[in-house]
Amino acid sequence: MANKINEEKASISVGRVMTCVLGMIVSREREIRNFIKTKYYKIIGQFGDENSYFKAEWKVNEKSKFFELSLLYNETGFKSIEKAKDFIISLKGKEGIITELKKSKQKENAPLLFNLAEIQNECTKRFKIKPDETLEIIQTLYEKKLVTYPRTDARVLSTAVAKEISKNLNGLAKGYKDEEVQGYIKKMIGEKYPTNNLTKTKYVNDSKITDHYAIIPTGQGYENYEKLTQLQKQIYKLIVKRFLAIFYPPAEYNKIQVTINVENETFYANGKVCINQGYLEVAKQNDKKIEKISTENEKNVEKEDDSNLEILKKLKKGQKINVKNYEVKEAETSPPTRYNSGSIILAMENAGKLIEDEELREQIKGAGIGTSATRGGIIEKLEKIKYIDINKKTQIITPTNKGEIIYDIVNYSMPDMLNPKLTASWEKGLDMVAKKEIKPEIFMNKLENYINSKFNKLVVKM
Image (cartoon, rainbow, N blue to C red):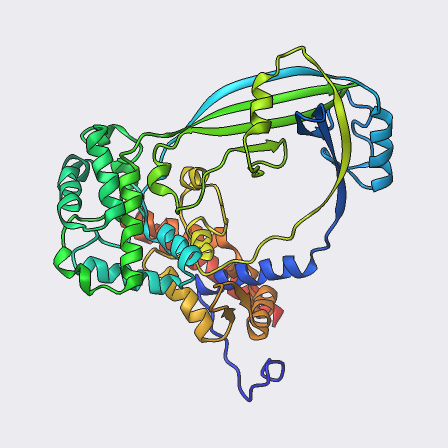
């Protein structure tokens, strides 16, 4: 191994958590490296006339003449552009009919509060800093009495804290001299947003708290505020805004789903417009909120105006509609994305799964890899021993040649060490011991039996 990495001597550093995380990074990199892009061709219909039309995307269904045929790459696209063009020709001159039209209202509540993993991920995305730097800053804010304890896995408050939450809010209103935040607080007061019924919401749950509740502003410590660096102030404001958002009403949307039939071929269009910003007023990043219209598989395609949405609103079920044109849109499969120093923390928290959807992340949350206090340090150690590289500007993580060689050695000799589920199960066992749900002897016996069985196999291999 020493020869492969151009070193005179080489030692291998492995660990229950560290090696598992290295495995996640190397596996992802090899997925990307071996990925072959595949092109396919979608059909987009333009429905209406020259001056007023909207786009809808074709999708195969049971009535389609292409149902379950090998010509298709997937349910929305053809393997070849020639077949896609043939399909368009077959529909020329055919009229469309609105077969379904669903109008609905959707409410979206503010996200849960920050735990350490969530804010580390957020700060990596926004400020391009490492998780350890985020922890260091929040630790400073904690020591200056501005925020609550940072090393927490919980994203909710305890009932006891929720009942006294007016103290935090009053402290913010009196002490935090930030014009934007003061505007949010004044609106809360002016609109009489309720603050005394927090215990009945999803933001309070005693069963989801172990040692500490979520990270929130204390409403104190403002005598120390001016001594903070600009980045420390920005991260403090991030915590404040996430906290205030939970008192705001939900964001509200009008949604329209339209289905068009052309000779038993089906096209779909969806429109969505925000009619009440609610908590988004606090959560937004000073970006322009514009109305959106999307086809079935292209959610959140931005448009410059709301003309398309207005057209969808005027449609009626059973209405015949002119087909202005069809177009072939080239698409291609995408490789998985590399971890950055924030997203790897979230993946560790969810036992090796990088789940983008925040609500789903919270629903399946269980035993993770490492703890809120140690995850950032594990990433830092992997970089220090040169198993991984972290791009300073983007925080994107890639394995080094040395890291990949270590991965291959472990994968050959003891592959289970690379399994996030196994590592997470050990974490769960330790947690059960701590909660006195199982006796320590039972856990240790299972662990010793497992290690002995693997060691015996390793000796045979060598």
